Length: 90
Image (tube, rainbow, N blue to C red; front, top):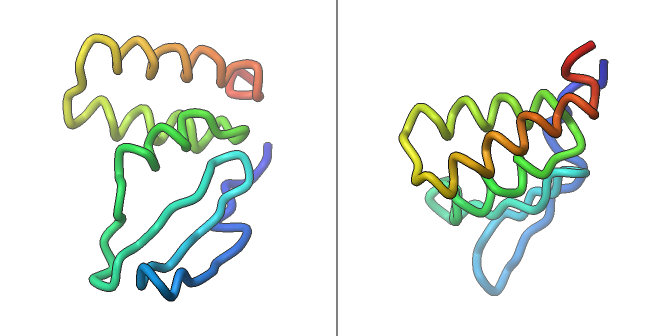
């Protein structure tokens, strides 16, 4: 089992005043000066496409708790099914 890594790289976008966190297989996430995630939907989509099945499943679970449209639910289900190929069924 591959452990869920917190991050692979942290940088600073000085022009936008944002902290930029990069996660391998999970995308890039930006945090504003107030510490809040700038685009939570983009972060969720990135994590659903992660190569880490734990990240996929935890993100899907969190997304389902807040309610989503039918199209989003289909994408969440597809990501969870795809996570089996990453080792989630073992």
